[in-house]
Length: 112
Length: 111
Image (cartoon, rainbow over all chains, first blue to last red; front, side, top):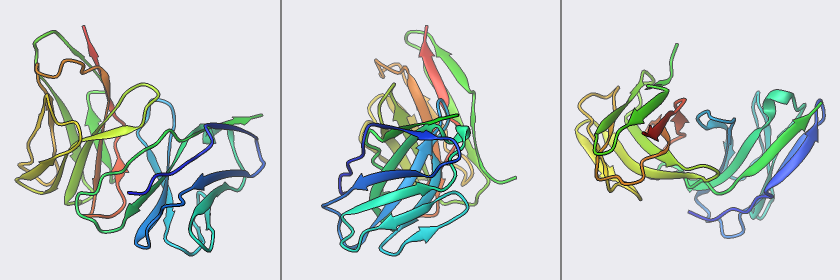
């Protein structure tokens, strides 16, 4: 699986959009970009994933650059409950037994 | 209400003791996984199972054992051979190769 690079931390004001960047310059053509988050002392929560098109669900939007070397997770209206560590992961879809490789992630603090 | 449950939430182990962590899912997923997380670190794969009665070692299987007798259940035993068992243990499940969903975790502490 390709490695990812994320900023270690960022702050965000409550009610504002949070834009979380991720670099994955060695991503392969069949690797998807996944985002999970982990609130303190809980299991990771799946947020969204995509291959090359932008994706949106009820939690967030995922913007992937045309060359696929980087992506941005957007939380449109951050709340205090969005304070968590956010992980960007790339992996091959459908690969049997393929583990998730979690790096350091970005620690997001949403402030009132 | 579909999901993954892990029990207990906290578990204490004495020196030389084997302990078993429970993981149950009702998502009808074929694949199940066990990860270990140390403080401030990412997750590391211990074991995974793609189908009943079959499982494979992950990156850090030494000192651990698993069984997969039922589709819904994938218990993890931390044996006395695991010299540094204190960690947060996470179970996940998925359809093979697809998105993994995690349980709430079990925190294991050594007395």
